[in-house]
Amino acid sequence: MSLNPPLSDAATAHDPAAKELDEGYRFPLCHHEKLIELFTKTGLDELQCETVEIPTLFTHFDDYWLPFLGATGPAPTYIASLTADLRNAIADKLREIFPIQPNGTIPLKAKAWAIRGVVHRAR
Image 1 (cartoon, helix red, strand yellow):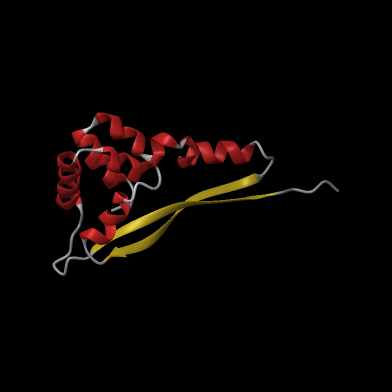
Image 2 (cartoon, helix red, strand yellow):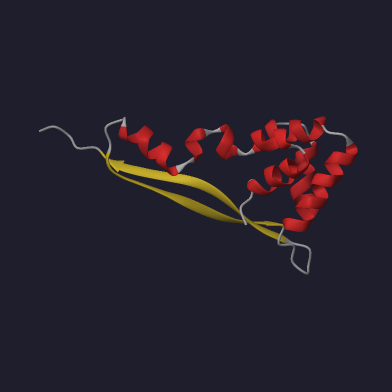
């Protein structure tokens, strides 16, 4: 399971306006096609674009959740703006969808895009 979509999915289940938390929605360049299009405009050839996945292990739910209560950044600022009841509902939804292991850990995957191309020099 990916690191970021669960929060926007859980929040959107309770507040449709939370769709804007989804980085794929907020940042159009978070899509393969848009990255290829952008780098094609730079003159690069033989473009390759792939996802890099980084295993991320949270030791328990609060290890994931507490940083969102700090009101620093778009998602934490959104979470901080909610009523306690709505924050708790989102946290409960996350607990439902996370792959929480018997020891309480939560294995997720952080994702990044990697792109490379070739510059053909004029002779």
